[in-house]
Image (cartoon, rainbow, N blue to C red):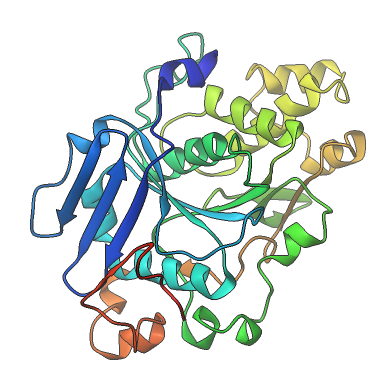
Length: 318
């Protein structure tokens, strides 16, 4: 191990979690024992000191299916986004996707990085670390990762046929190995890491390692993602110019070439972006928009039993 993985240390990847919808509750079965939390109790800060990547025990997903990854620095953070978190569980259950929840912080970059003093305990950062760790799982061929504050609304939550876009098609079509949302401005791409698709192939895993080794703070825009893409191109040998090396080493920070340059030079690095490329039905829903009984319908939670723990003994079926 080296870089961010060496700083991370051990991660509990054998754990599972169960959830109760009504009285907010999470139950974790881990290598250290059983832990139960409710929203009214302590934050679970001690529990999160050991990074954990836990599979939802209430899912009924077949093997070799792309997984949905959610991440938070603490159990308290999950409860703070509780309706949106449940929305993701229901969405995944309708599509038979396994769900993995990361709880804990991710390490700072290696000491040689120019951003070594940045704090790396934000949700977007731990989401990327969680995805990188999950891709080492032998039965997970790819991962969809998204921020906790994104939701799907209406019939599309529980009925894949009602969705405007098929989220899984990007995996089934097998045209890209890494994909993020982006918009084009003046021939340049503005990238976001709010949502991410990564296939379990060496180039994609290397891309995540480069991103995590050099990424700064909570910034989830443009430069960290693009820099990682250029580093991957240089490391793969398809970007050989001095300009590309300067970008990869952060020596040049202005007037950087558009990503089209990378796409032309590195066709084997199957990186893609687009406004509706990755889980387009997920969008930001402000907390003040979630009030009232109608939200159960909006987020696909109506009709579910709110008093049981959804677990291996009681799968979440929609």
